[in-house]
Amino acid sequence: YGHPDPNTYKKRLEELHEDLGIMVHCVRNQSDAGLKYKRVPRGFAELKEFKPIYFHDDDYRKARQDLISDMVDKDYEKYGSFNFTQERAIQQRRRSAVNGLTLKRSMT
Image (cartoon, rainbow, N blue to C red; front, side, top):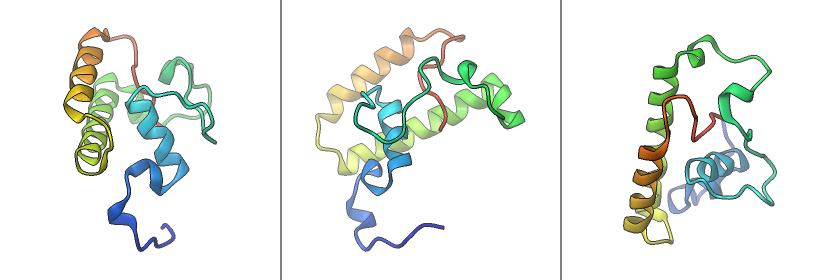
């Protein structure tokens, strides 16, 4: 449940709530300086607290990361205030540069 916001459909994800803000910054590899929540520096492998069992599956975790990344991309296509084509190219280069053992995004 969330508190109603009459402008929900006019805002980018990171403007809706702080926890969504860190998710977007994580996906976009943007600095989290000044945000209430912070990314885990080395991603999933660094987490020490309880992790749901399905997040131990690398393929599942990658699929969830891709789903969230696509959701953020669509949000930026609709509401973003930057050059989406240029940002998409940056994202594609980053994805191709990441090997299977290194997480480029941590789940929040």
